[in-house]
Length: 150
Image (cartoon, rainbow, N blue to C red; front, side, top):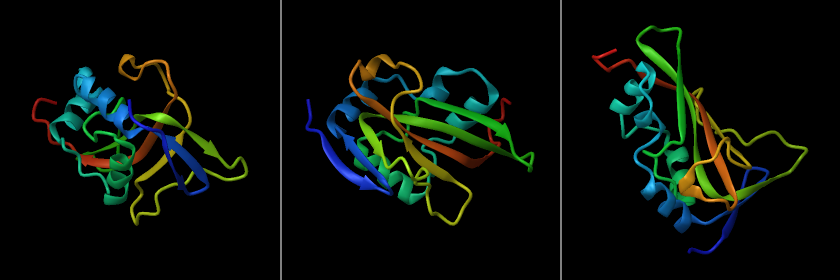
């Protein structure tokens, strides 16, 4: 068991255990895209490792999150039919204490890609047990439609 650490992210205080998060991710059998049979998830999976923005990858690494172990991902058609717009999230062991007067700290990247922290899980994932679990959600990740089988 690792130690609980903390840092400030925007107006949020993040408490996390990177060692426990890494252990939980190591026990997962792939990410959410690999457990799904839909065409959008197959397309996402074929593009791993996904090229997330550097600041997003830095946050995932700091929290102990494996960027290939998203808990959930889903896609919607973008305005360009050769692109799929993805949304999803990752889990980490820990909690997020927001300043109730603030909005979520979105990425300031010069793209439409955004991410933010949410206290608590969206649904139970056995590898994360019953302790405190929070998530890093992302939205507007445009990826090309490349899976030939779709």
